[in-house]
Length: 329
Image 1: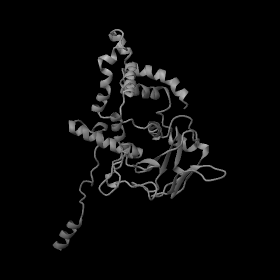
Image 2: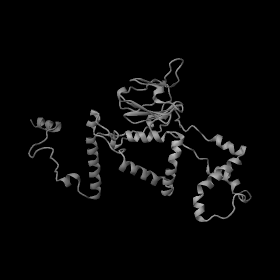
Image 3: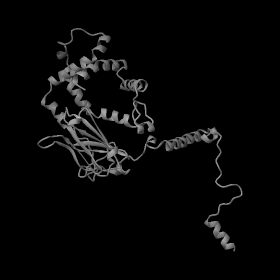
């Protein structure tokens, strides 16, 4: 999207934020409720229709979440300075002598509410105008690198993945998601992307001269090229690598920084299993809750009785029983 398009949408978004009382949770709830009721964002196509190519609406299961994650990661986190520093910066702007030229009359409560955004901007401008060399020093000390390391020199996993100078990545047991930053204005047709079984590369297409290489090298593990995908969203490439073997990787490309796989969260969400397994797990959890409350289980509700392990009159013969019979002889 262009800057003009984003600016055109800011007006309605500001109105929505005000109607939500500034509570982002309410705003997000209303937005996703709209997507659920008025769009196909939450629709999951039938597996048979997907294979036959008949799908015209909805997203395959898991793709909508990836779209959200890609949109969220297009913008960097904005780290706040320490509260004490922030207060010290605002103190010069709250002195009566400096505030007198700007304050003509005491505003009413309604005027204070309506002008809150403007007054906060004025405070920021005044703080910038009165910035000294001492105030600039804390900004330089703010860490840009948030990667943490173990005593062995391995990265502490974030999202079960890690970070390098060229890309950031996360992973599940089945796939790796790689985020590669590209220059502003880069188009998909300008890129030469290759995803093979044991290697990947992302670079620019050039007719003459040298290509700009963003990522290139052998993969830490093998992938399924036919299942791998990539997309371009706002100057960030989202590459999804489907693993050949279900295991947690310690890096994406051999030679890059590794993570400590012993710290990876290996728990699986129930949605990661097939439908039959999901049904069994949900039934087990339901029965456990019912038993804790002293209520009937799923078998009691449906009238199903547990089948006995052996028919009446039939004795199970194990090795111990065989030995007893042999000793009697």
